Length: 191
Length: 367
Image (cartoon, rainbow over all chains, first blue to last red; front, top):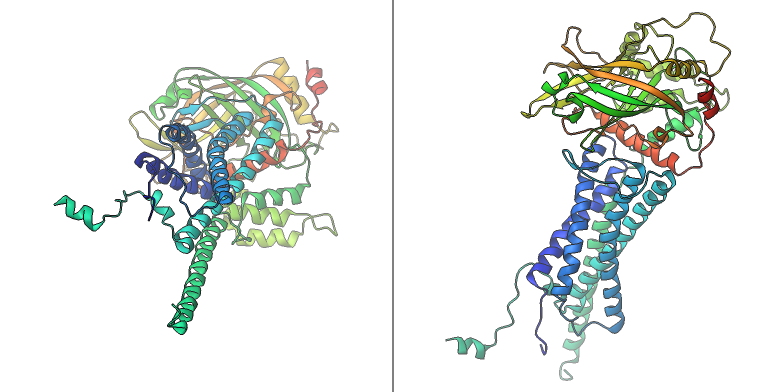
């Protein structure tokens, strides 16, 4: 290996995996609640605060990205691949920000109280308007499907790099720290 | 490795097989994720009962009336206030039960999805209410003038809608399917008896409205009490006339408008305090008589408006919009109502609004 493998900063990795779990849970709850009767209320009651938590974390994540820029792409990635990776990353950041905002906005336009927990609730960010609600409600669904497709692309690409190209790309993001490969000489030096 | 061409070819073959296996693995992983997503989204269970299918059933019974609620389509908006006695605070920490006054928006309606249907005394009357609490919380409740609800489960409700769907040949529901439904659901037969046993009043103003499902009240000590609530009219009861239904198709609404213009209408909000043994997941049976009744306060409605101008038109009176201090019971119908109301709301809010049966002119004429 000519270049040393560099990982994302520990905090970036923590954010990535925390949000990965949250976003996937959110997407599954989202599609499940709209077809649920008996579980609808419980699922919606989780969906709202979880969405707002994602909205807060994506802002943290965006700031973190400026503080901790990502490590360079591995040499195995072509120019097109890098473009695609950057575009999908941008799309996911954008969706993590826009989807909760659209959700908040559509509930505002419908004047549904935006209850997070107990008596804690958010203010309305849009006026009470039927058409606005209808448009945002549709947008919320379309953007969520788009997010799922983007996730599938992201997941497929990392599987491809890990199993076919075998360039250890996943190691950049694994939660644990990867030690740089220890050579025999450095091992000797340590004594 | 020119010295061992067979070995090289063999190694390449193995390599190809290996790569194929790995590609297959990727395919399986992606398919598993997509499959899980499809499972959660209900695509693998196309016959399961969903909010959309239940709402479709309403549309098949009533036809699609763009812009209107799929149930309780005909109505008028009202507004006023609720003055709490403070008596409910013993059981619930909800701000609405502290002594004081909160503004209320509501809507009187007739059950069924037909917005221009003629008023009839035996048609179920509804009252949706929204209490706007001083701390910004909201409480909504959707009530009807039936002492109990005729259906215990979402499935029974759906079956009944299917049985009530007009036959395309006769234009009327098939009596045999309704008979079969009632045979399968003795709890509905029992509930209908209880409903028939309650005399129907002459109008909206002297109707008793019931919250139907059980809820739970949570007080500041964290104690949970099963509860049902109802609104008892201050206006004196008068039985619905046995004579023929009046000529005026909107006689119930016109009477309501005239009365509100004459004087504010009032109801007492009564909390029926349940015992631990009282069933909370069966809206078809009333709790035993003699349960403690708490007068939580007085609802006053002093303004009436047409659907065209009332803010209530774009409010979903979802019975699970609850403030802290009021919680759902384990009744599966509550979550079902919430899901189906939401589906109906989403459909109608995306459609162009049509003029309602009770026009702004009707409301003015009451003056």
